[in-house]
Length: 308
Image (cartoon, rainbow, N blue to C red; front, side):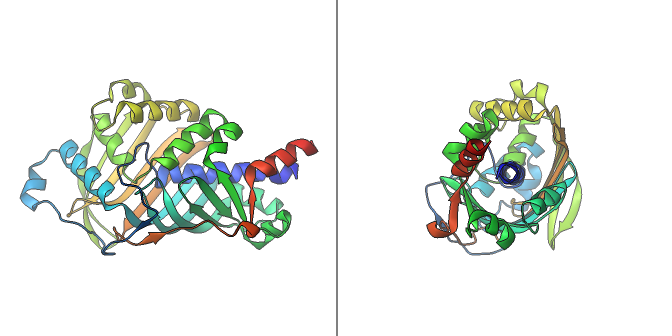
């Protein structure tokens, strides 16, 4: 159980990092709701007139994009994260109306897959997010190590206890989430540039990019980030050993985030996260798995500590 417990903790860190870089933000903008309905269109909402958007400088346009994307409250998402020698590819639908909610599933590869295999996992993984907890399913093989239960519950209130300051930071990210942290960070950097146009998933898009340096965060307040968001980013950079993050975003003609890529060097090695967003306003309804098919991660860790 000690080896299994450590593997579960590693899986938590990978998935939470995936969420933080691919889906989550340090400050949400939405009303409380566990179900979000919409048109299901690729864009969604009303776009600014082309002439108006063209007249805006990059920072002003990205501010508009951030507001509109936040207001959409849900989307379908595909996220690929490379972290050191591990790679995770996930897809699903998420809502940020009341913190991160929804479900994504996919596969883990590389070193992380090897670690999970030792504990019975086959590399498949499903993450389900609610307002107070995250649930992870790593397949039948892992369930055999858990008395037949398929889902592991990670209560957000327990993250700080189990992971210290890093867990507290991740808890805040998950409970205050939307996809446009990168957009806000680019505005805060003060160095955002328009670097071309591309078609992403059939959507004509304009690309913007820039670097956000840790030393610049102290002056980031009021430039797209609140003081609370700036402080959270500073903590994240410090805890992860990040000095500079390179950010690229692709914006559709109706001013919605289509794609983003974030890359940086950290304590766990080079991290590259790529996220694609479609079908803004999609309906997202999430519920907790059956209690009979769920075990609590905090209890698993306690059992592992007692066994040692």
